[in-house]
Length: 345
Image (cartoon, rainbow, N blue to C red; front, side, top):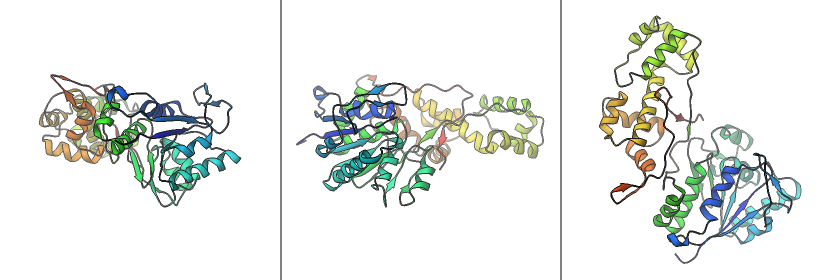
């Protein structure tokens, strides 16, 4: 690599600590001993006054917005809208960065800052799934892609919520400096070295306690017998209902059909087994009630947006020597926890 990057992070009032910390962790720590380039790094605010986070603390930055003029990469973290002269200066600096060939990136709802600046007009972009519909409504010239981790469109890139910002920053490192450098950063951060941007966002879809106790018992029974064949007629008998009444009440209570609920539960268990176990994909499929690896792959790809094997690689990470290097350790879900599913558009 011939050179490193100069990275500038934009922080405003009401900023989110987690998203702000992502570029600090990826670019703001000296990891030259691991073969990572020494990035130039600056945190920039509109004025010298402290800016308040949404978490009850404030931050005082050394640099103002004019520091963006030296950056190769500008990262916009989520915050409340800038106002007046500060907003005009931020927009000018963002456009100037793109015009000179720098990269401009937003994390999570920071996409709204780029949209207000007009940088997303005619471009594909994403944001946290909770805000995607609002982004599309408020900025109709933006092509919002709601169910992905991150999107690149020319020199502008946007990420979905929370950890997707890590994925985007590591992707940018990989793109500019190669897989070895990106993997070194990921290993130090103890995160997956690569999740493809097209992978789906995930949200928890909890099953609310049912008002109907017999239906609740039927749901709990099903979570303990996912490896068995479950037909709606037999399931309805366990709830002491006719199949038609069972289907109607089931949808009213859970928001989905019995078939969809079972698929989400089984895929959720498959994810847990892939993250934590060493069973073959065939065995995972059997334990989840899919019967075959092909059937698991079909439903896993549809609900999760990637294949079981790719999902396992992302969560287990590369292995060195006789002992695995564990790059993530997601908290295990209980047997009755429903599958995480694609975020709604």
